[in-house]
Image (tube, rainbow, N blue to C red):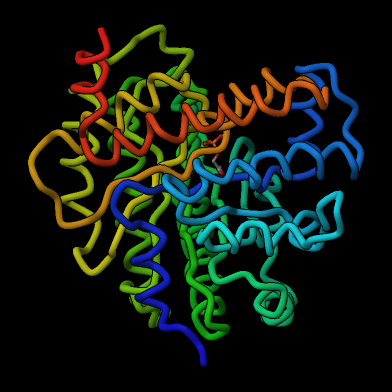
Length: 341
Ligand code: 13P
């Protein structure tokens, strides 16, 4: 029997849990491995991801789902068990990244368009058979106000593609994570991030309605409202939380069950503190959780550094970040820190 989309989506944002984004493309995981001096091979990628999925307590207690890359959803653990089965055994839901990456948008220097719609119906059917019950598609919106980036054309094309992807996912019995990421790399201030993110979300929900996507069976994966890294400005967790929540109340329908943030290059601690500040604020109509890649994995990658004897330390580092972010989904991270001090 096919599970109901709204039940899968609700499980993805269950209280105290969040999503592990382990869907780095071959190029991205190579960059991460280069930083820790590990050669990126099919086996080293498998060994690393296997250690995460075998972090049984962390997975059981804090992780609702795992986003995989095409290679990983087909891979087997060293003992021959499919990695998907390791994930399922912890109670977490396997998911799959299905976009084919952001490419330059013709005619709009500095803007990108995410590709991957061709053949998507057939790929989703295969991923469903391989065990995926949710998917991810990432639209990438950069900000460079000196040259009119992002253009309205880029926002429109990317949000339209997200809606076409989401409709195909739901047809296949798969919950779409819709990810319209506004990058935090630019020189913009926090209010520019607010305005650009708002333009994206307004367009996104218009397109999702037009595509007849059932919002109850979706999860939003947005950026936080945050100053660009090159602006030289910082903002407190309280300001980030206040502005991010104000924006969502303006733009995200309450039919959406949950919002699972990307970390986007924030430090581990910032990503936790900002999520905590949002959940410690007044009650919201959606669950607010994490779908972190770097903010969950930077610590275990460093601890592991490609050595079998470091697996336990890497698992402990992953469990710690997952626990801290779990507390942040409940707004209890700060109290816990104060108690520990
Ligand atoms: P980060 O948390 O590292 O931004 O990655 C999340 C993700 O899946 C981006 O698409």
